[in-house]
Amino acid sequence: MLAETKPRWLNKKIIHSACRDTRKLLRGLGLRTVCEESLCPNISECFGKKVATFMILGVVCTRGCAFCGVTKDKRPKEVDLNEPLKIKEAVQKLRLNYIVITSPTRDDLFDGGASAFCRTVKEIKSISLQKRVELLIPDFKENLSSIEKVVFSGAEVIAHNVETVPSLYIKVRRGADYRRSLNVLSRIKGSNSKLFVKSGIMLGLGEKEKEVKNVLEDLKSVGCDFVTIGQYLPPSLEHTPLKEYVAPEVFNHFKEYAFSLGFMDVKSAPYVRSSYLAHSFFCE
Image 1: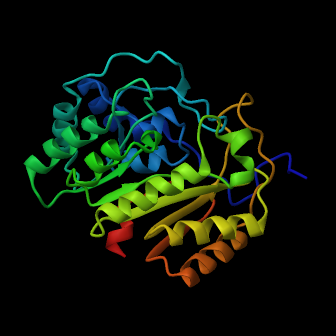
Image 2: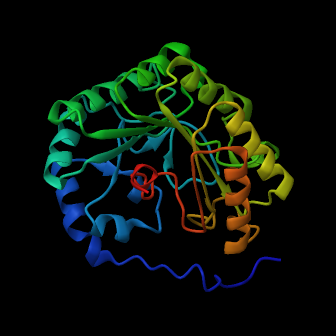
Image 3: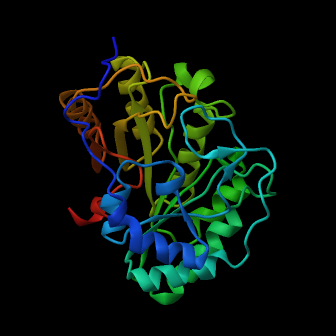
């Protein structure tokens, strides 16, 4: 049974004053972040350090995932063609060396937005080839041309999250397909073995231990190098209900299991998110 109040290990508070300067800079450039759009609980920690995960291609998703706080609509706004240049400026002003770029799913675009990812990487790399870039991509409907665009964009890491176990997809990830996501990850690694491939899963949605282990096995089998495991926290009462607050020792258990499978690095804890401290995969 779900506890009525959050347990002691989920006591992180958003400190809005810590976000002010970074938020002001981003607003001045007309940029948005997944940190804000997904209501990430780590936002004040990251913004306070002037770290952000940029969200390109607008803030409206064409899919209907029931866990996500991003706005849904079948008719998103037009793409801002100057966005890559704006992100380049933000990277310079924030003095970022590791940059994470993501987007909502844009099924309305001919390539799912893959070309916009590529343009953004190009602008960042024009500052310095030493800048490392991670792309957190949608599934592009498994379109090989779109996948290969991002694979050869110059980014060092390509991430695509499976989010949950297959049995919960119909309920939690409407419009997505578990096997398709695995195929996307496999195609990424198969097209460019030099890339680091990353995926993530949430706990607390009603998944079983064996199901989580099976997902970790699947991710390793398709070439994932890194994996993140975090606690699902509903953005609102209208989203998929939380089934369980997962204890830290359970996260440690799955971390140990993932390492036993051969992952290069694993982040597994209640507040872990796909892009949270993403640079630390290279710095530890």
